[in-house]
Length: 389
Ligand SMILES: *Cc1c(COP(=O)(O)O)cnc(C)c1O
Image (cartoon, rainbow, N blue to C red; front, side, top):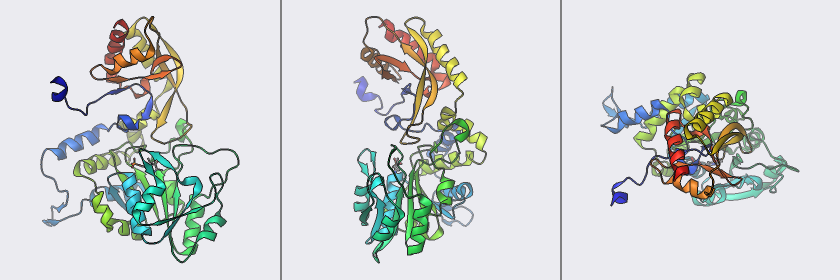
């Protein structure tokens, strides 16, 4: 009975140290975004209504202006998620024609999202060029025919290719497309708006860099590095975005008012980079001070008491962003006597709220990076209880 009465979707404490944990709902929202949802959820809103004119307005104007301001793109469109945005873009820009993509970029993102499958559903004919490890500009050139409509570049966000490799950059793809008078599209995956290089995170192109490569349109997620609600965002040239906006698939994958409210509030925080880094939980966690993480791990240890120690370790960005990036952290390592790590983890997950830890090297580990400061006491108490069983 109790199980039936309780909501099935409930908060958990993420102690894994994986910041963008897709199974745990990706990006926690900033306070401003949560407040925006609350404000809009309770009543009616000007979602598609121009208040001053008293006529129908556009739900798209809401986030569009901010995206244009922040990225420098001519135009922008928000849909339900990035997979949907890619589907819209392929349908609008390549339907009934050929879309060329490198074999090295025919990726699976996870959860049955595979680039070739999306292309097939969009009505565009996939033309593969190059090999798994090496693709050259001349491969694209040789594949261009009168039926070609689009060159697609996909950011390999969740894995790295090393060794004997060659990749055609987004800039080269854009130039090849221009020369052939076809459209270029860049599936960036993670939407990084704030350069995180000062915090040691390299290798993930920012949205601005992606646009500067000269491609006609860029696709990215709202709930990965952007740190907002689930959304798929398209930015690019007026012509490309207008084609996407008027494609029937855009209506099928449109965003709801709560998402648009939260996204708008999140984007507004980026007007001041330091505010965005402080207020957006994903950015705050990714740029957390290692000394503070150590103090948090020690606070956990103090709260738990016996059967644990604090060790150095690494957190993960997750969400198919910055693959291979290692973030230095400090971990609470549990050392129960006579209790298997899986049993301790099970007890932690059975709590209210459930705590999801990491198990590595036969130990239960808790990473303070993804534990909110106001959850530290709860976690310490729950761990103590789990160890005492
Ligand atoms: C994550 C990702 C997607 C899918 O994004 P969703 O917002 O989860 O739909 C698409 N392309 C790339 C390259 C990605 O990394």
